[in-house]
Image (cartoon, rainbow over all chains, first blue to last red; front, side):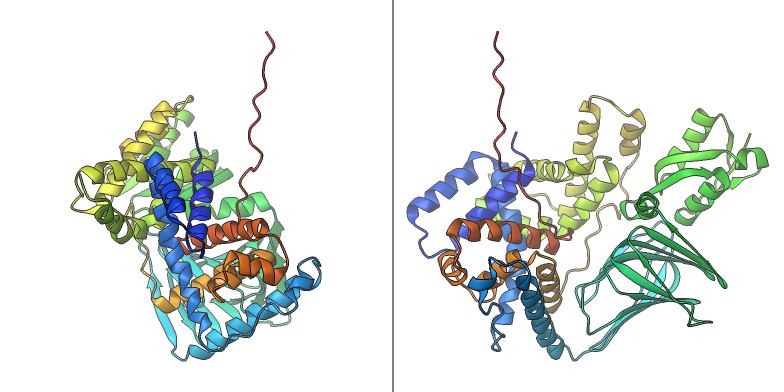
Length: 316
Length: 190
């Protein structure tokens, strides 16, 4: 069976060849034959073509004489060291031109309700994913990119732009992005930062000299003046499983696991019995499917579960 | 039978804008990340087959029902059946926000997004794509400009364009190399 990825590969090669000058009727017949051979070929071709049209927006960069990004390219092609630097410089130059065109100011407030999750594209190419029960404001202008996380949790995938720092304000902490992918969770004055890729700097507003830089796989949890940093790429990935709609518990006590579920659901779990509260839970669960979790508690752990409509009481 | 041109327009206007949302839905309801691209392809093929008989009135619910049924079938067929998983899929019912389209980007936002995708490509790949999409060079012209073979240019272009399209449709924009070596079947001597 042909995998979707290899079909995509072939479809892309067809799209590229079809744009060339030497495209003949014979070529076209061969493409038609490939498309007709399997509807999946056709779908893969259409889908690539759909995305391709979006990539064609890049043609807009043709107009005002764009600095030629590939001086001496034949020379550097074989030399690894110089190439990337030149090329990055070229991209930055392009970036600068685009910023020039951006005179407008963008400022929006985004919210999610309990159990909700949305993905928000910013005009600079960055993406923000809001987790359950979250409110944040985002402003992008010609000099800076700023987000105010009022409450809840969000994941940031930040477009690289050295000229416009990306800063997240989360209560008592400021998070300045030096790299690319991370999340911030805020419950009152507790701020948790998880870094998936790159580096971020966490500043304490009360004492600016206490700034720390954390990197890939680091989890920083601050509350008041206290700041605790641990490193575990596995835990960092678990912390972000909400992006797939999942909660991942690593030997977490039932009372903490219940608190996590309660962030995502109107139906609240209440652990009424200290012996039940101390039970340790591990595994991945659908964040909004409390019923499945409760079934597991009853069948797997032999706990008593009383469903009272808005509240589920758990005891031993 | 629906005319192919109409079918294609319908996919472009109604189905592909939901691509990122569909991918999220699959990822959320299927444990093995490696299956996502194949499942999406199969779901599209099912949608295509039904739509070529008659275009559904509403694309979103139709896509959702098709996706859900396909995941249930696959879960039931899987060698190790997780009853819990099948039960969860069965109980999905019809949440109105299961497949929520992302806000459509404006032309300017799409340009920024394409630029960001470009910045994430490895340097050589990025350069080949820039020559093609910004300067409008053909594969041959790019090969002459850079002094490397046409095949190399085409390979870089395929990788770069796939990654960019993936990024524009909401993916990570990472390059995925196809396993180029054909699978060798070992003859067993009887």
